[in-house]
Length: 156
Image 1 (cartoon, rainbow, N blue to C red):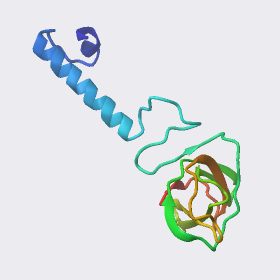
Image 2 (tube, rainbow, N blue to C red):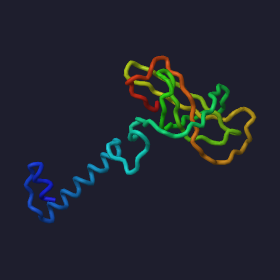
Image 3 (tube, rainbow, N blue to C red):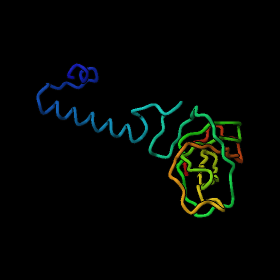
């Protein structure tokens, strides 16, 4: 450990107090790195995702659902990945319930530097009173007003 630190110009004798201090610093860096998406215990696609609303490109196979505007009891669903289909169209991936019960729609907010996408899940008209709790990954195509380009894409 002292050899590694000396490469950075830190001269520390290896006594018990210093070893504990170094261990604590490394533990804090690992936790902070995981939270901000610098370090991830498992790969999640072409890029790392983070807990700060930033999402990653993905190679998942699409299972597109059609957007609906007749949903009841809507709630927001966080989506986890995206694919660029064309300059003004993306596909977002999200957890979904059974199609006999739930439908989905997306909403966007665009600025010169970012694109925020919000996915909503709601009950479809005529859905059963009780639905089974099976979750799968679905996707939806979202059309943008302007090309995505280098703008930051995130959950809204």
